Length: 117
Image (cartoon, rainbow, N blue to C red; front, side):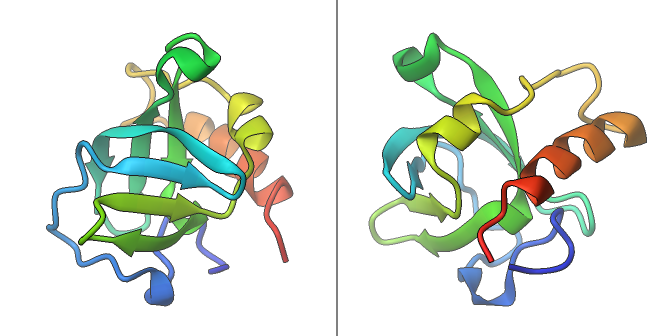
């Protein structure tokens, strides 16, 4: 993975500006939801994933560095996390995700500690 958890890996196949809303999100052990919102902002790129009924409608913020690949033909985003890692992640906070460095640090710290090497 990239050193910047808030940036897409060069091998992810995502082109800034491509709309990912509605793409299915695939954890290493199966589908976990769909992209509800995303940002390509440099050093602050992320996906907001609606996990649906799988974990009772929770929305999670996934830093772009967790994205392994984007398959535009299949409309799927593959992440380097398990369902349990995503389930245990900090819940998405719509009031803090933009401009709150502490929140980004908390979320980024969680995912950095759960990265596969």
